[in-house]
Length: 214
Image (cartoon, rainbow, N blue to C red):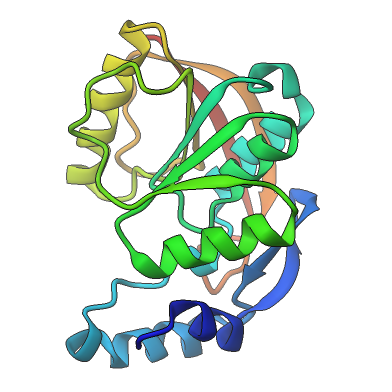
């Protein structure tokens, strides 16, 4: 698959996520066909699962928190970590942040670019794993729904705590994933996020936005 943008346009629709109707995003309406389409190409193209095609509860909660509290990010250098569809980065840019989004999946990077253009904002792509980077490149880090696997959750927790100790503001949205770290975070907001039962085990996920304390 040589053209990720073409694939995304063909397999998604432009719509709004339930918690952030202000934003327009390329999102999949049917989970199984898209998942099967990308799985069928895994061996040929090395595609990871299409996490970029869905507005996960943690990302929606962080985006909602940013849109409701623009002073948290306006004029600041903001990173959307492992951004997926880029919902948090787009929200931050919408309220005046200098937004960047990191991803290692070229399809996610294409989705982020398409979603930024849809919303008439600028989001700088970072096409590498930033979790080995030292603190200091951003004023604020946003992270949504990154704690569904232990290795990733452990890396994220260690990195965001280091960022917080260096004075970076870190907000992490989590809908009760199994490996969300329990120490060093304070709750700042709570949302009931409507979800699809194709993606989740329930129709509403209570999702908390946490601030890392270091």
